[in-house]
Image 1 (tube, rainbow, N blue to C red):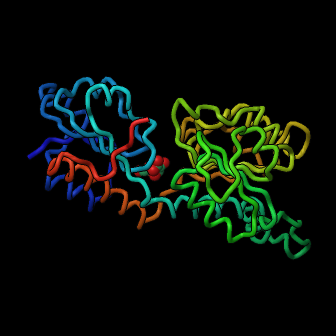
Image 2 (cartoon, rainbow, N blue to C red; image 1 turned 135 degrees about the vertical axis):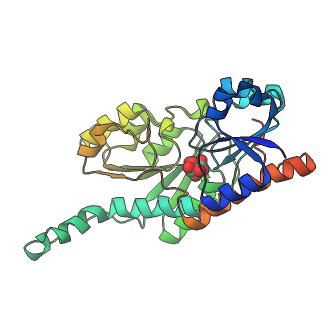
Image 3 (cartoon, helix red, strand yellow; image 1 turned 90 degrees about the horizontal axis):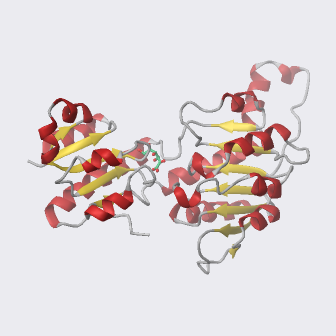
Length: 312
Ligand code: 8YV
């Protein structure tokens, strides 16, 4: 029976399969009995859990790191590549769920649905009309990161009668306009949606310059990683709101230092805050965990993972 180091928890039905097929250890087991580290041939984890490089270095027999999630920014991939350790994620099975969360949050932000719900619950409808909001139809939407999830969002957004453009590392020659300059894209659009991978290459991709280009009538949606945005600049832009140097609002599903987000966000009425819900549906998380399991099984059976992360 292969030995697997588990970093992070899984639903009971997935844990039962792991326990039935592998000897599952956690980091406390390694600390308690260091010799066990030599037996570990796989790590199973979640995209929001860090896989520390020093843990990987303690595992001489490690062959695969399989994460439940599409993001792999918390996995030491350079070290894994040096050691010939394959990294496998769970792409595609969560595209629809993240796209739904993105568009649902965007609509809630533009039409101010949380505020409208509170308006009714507080009885204010009896004496006043809720203020007019902003339509999505006819707006110019810029998508940052036209990968699998970005394409799913674009395809769904086309039904809302928007003009789409995108920014990313390369022009993929798609039906939508490519903009190589992110600030130029921000300047040209009403809504900027972030769905690029996290990591060093995208750290603070959206900074004060990009936010200023988006402008006081612009909206930001982040369903990617908090690290894509300079949060100090974002807070300043949100606090300025519809005035010079500000942005009109943001829908944020990801943050620096989750779940201990900057308390300044809690004081803002022009922000929709969600707790990293992108893939958080029963169906999607079951499919992700199953694919993570199948990656490990496939590796041990055939020496190939089903969905390895392609080298940069
Ligand atoms: C969460 C995600 O990480 O897939 C990703 O990269 O950000 C989300 O799915 C979730 O915790 C994955 O288990």
